[in-house]
Length: 289
Image 1 (cartoon, helix red, strand yellow):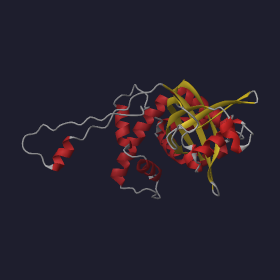
Image 2: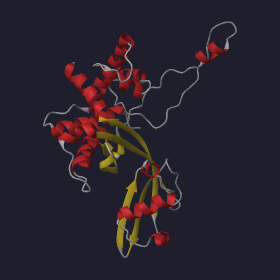
Image 3: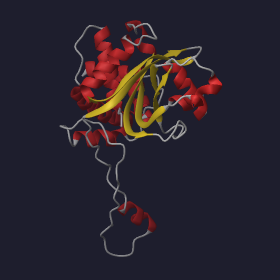
Image 4: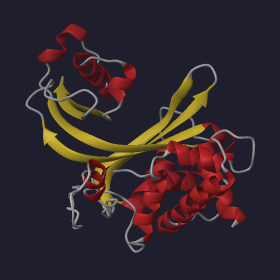
């Protein structure tokens, strides 16, 4: 699945390009993030800061509160520093039996079966999409760019490339400028579990993304929606399919969409998102260090 580090790296790729400076590598981002989380956790314990407090540590503490168990994630990353900090979509947990003598109380029984934090498994390549949203005081977050690929990409090269492509070369929008950085949110989606659907309704809202292709009047059309698009828009499955056909360029009558022979591939997406303020808090810490 996508990670916080992937989001940080996308911001780093875009910000360094717009600011004309050398970007950190993904490995450097992962290592620095582990150290940052550990420092944030220590600061919170020593200072007793509350989220939103008006002090220099507020950003770090806000981030620590927002992302659960970050110190455990950092620990698992540091235990295998040579591996990328991506994770697989599922992790199996094994229960362990306690070995002490005597009768266990309910509390000690639960404690003895608590597994250690799972070690994140490395993932080196994946199909992926990078999405940029911009915050508007009136309308909330609005799409500013979204481009990806269904071909497996090396994670570092793919994230860097598509972070810039989606920000600067999405033809639906003007290129993102440096002054827009503070308003941005980035979302990284790693795509998994591609399956041919039996028909246009053979998928689940909120679980599957869709990739459709079809021919109409001798011309081939195609388009995709990531898994979160339909729930965010409040669409039904039929509305999603029709909207996707419109996105592909189909201009036929809405009530005739079922007459089109659609090829539908469903897939799942493991997504993470991050706001610029959270990237900036980490990046300022890196500069101070």
